[in-house]
Image 1 (cartoon, rainbow, N blue to C red):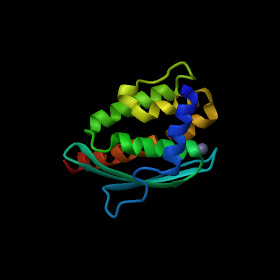
Image 2: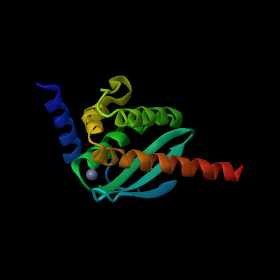
Image 3: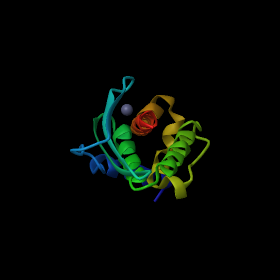
Image 4: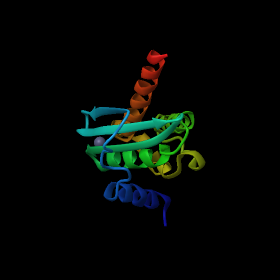
Length: 150
Ligand code: ZN
């Protein structure tokens, strides 16, 4: 099977059967992000425990890229130490900024490498990054709160 079509399968799978979709009852924080250029929306609940990502749940509407990417993101960061999750996020941001010149490190990005081709289309990069930016925002806000409490 061609790599391109394999990647399409991965994206379609996540789109049809999104992981961690459906908001948890409890969360440390809830954020809502929109991508007006495409009409994608995501609401994300984050729970951090002991420096790790205990749960990321989300709900959203939008194109297959935004929904699949949010599913892949939530799967990738759940259970990881926060700093490791942030490194995955940086690696994905770098891939999305590569304008098609990178294929992504599969060791780090796992299913997210399937989105590498999106980096060739600037208009779609925002779709792919929506969930990731929501996650980053949520982490920054929770950590900021803890700083304030000290
Ligand atoms: Zn979109």
